[in-house]
Length: 209
Ligand SMILES: [Mg+2]
Image 1 (cartoon, rainbow, N blue to C red):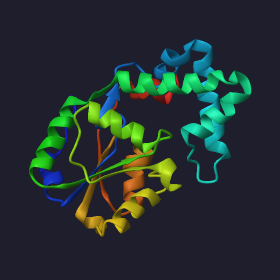
Image 2 (tube, helix red, strand yellow; image 1 turned 60 degrees about the horizontal axis):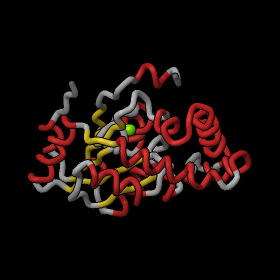
Image 3 (tube, protein in one colour; image 1 turned 180 degrees about the vertical axis):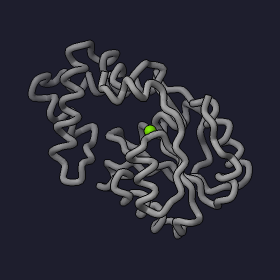
C-alpha cells in the first residue's frame, strides 16, 4: 500500500511526477524481465551490459535506446533492429497504471494543478508518452526525458531545467518519485520538496537480481 500525502501536494501549484514505478509499472518482477521477453535469457544479459556501457560512454551519463542498440549491433547485427522493436512492444504490452498514484494524479488534475512528468530514462519520450496514454494518463503539461536533454534528475539539473523553462520557483513545486538518488536527493539538489514512494521489489533490484 502506497501512502501519498495529498494535502502536501495540493499546497503547491506545480506537481512533478517520475514516470517508471511511480505513475506506471511493468507487470513483471523486475524491469529487466522486459529484455527476456523481447529476446530470451542470453539477450537479456547482453542488453543489460550494453546499457551500462552506453551510460559509462556518455559524458552526461545518459544514453538513448539507439546508443544501447548501437552497441548490440556488434553481436546481433541486423537482428538488433527487430530486438529493439520487440523490446518497445514488450514495454507497451506490460505497462499498467499504479492504481494508488493514478487516483492521486486524477485528483490533482481536477484541482487544476500544473503537472510535469520527469524521467531519467533511455526510451524516447514518444514511447513513454504512448505508455502513459495506454495507462490512462493525460492532461499533463509536458514530459521531460533525461536522454533528450543531456542531463538527469540525479544531478538536480533536469529539475532545474524544468523549473526554468516553465517559470516555476523551487518552492512552488513538489516532486513525487520512487528513486532515492534520482527523485529524492535529486529534487533536494534543485530546491524542490520531494515525496518518496514505495517501489516493487526494491531490495531485489538493489541486488541486481
Ligand atoms: Mg522511477
